[in-house]
Length: 129
Image 1 (cartoon, rainbow, N blue to C red):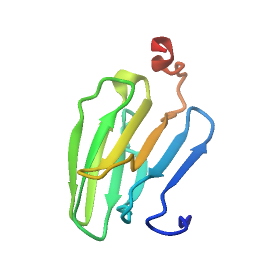
Image 2: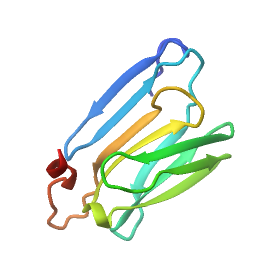
Image 3: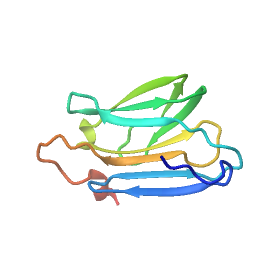
């Protein structure tokens, strides 16, 4: 587990991997950021992923799509929340940003490809620049 030096000091961390895998964690504020635990798993039907959010204090996150046209949504988490993200229209690709409501700076960006073993397509967002 990575612990940034000084809760209020700010950080900007990129984690990159194959198939467009990206995690970008930032905090530029002067107060301690929310520290939800996130998990991203296959929904079991081959067409969606589940975002699981666990937190120790009530938290509202604003989730925005950065590439595929999904509408923004607010997610209220008391202890645990799950959000289903349908990937059929994006051919398995996702690019999401999560921010703590009312807080400055990006909390987390999640991007990548859910591989189901079938032949896939290149990221459709690449064609849009």
